Image 1 (cartoon, rainbow, N blue to C red):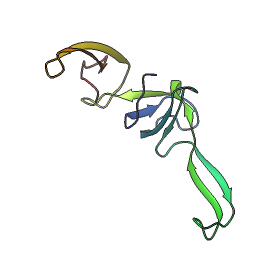
Image 2 (cartoon, one colour):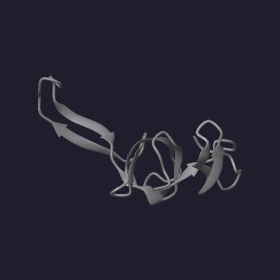
Image 3 (cartoon, rainbow, N blue to C red):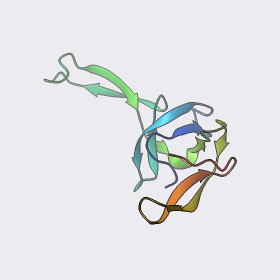
Length: 108
């Protein structure tokens, strides 16, 4: 999966098209992610020890990872992600890093 937790993404299709947000959680087995402020669902809850009042809670639901694009950290433009191998001096070996295709900037 090309998307990781804490990435800034842009929704490119669906009801929330055009919205930007941070990835809160990733489900690689299902190819789904939860994005901050996108795809709100309502959950009806009973009163309990944690939630004394109960009622209707709104929270973000998962969306398909193919419906979002990662934003370039340098330009803020949606971009595809590539893999680049660089030599790490500290570990004395080659490691894979994610890079933005448009600017060549490394992603955290």
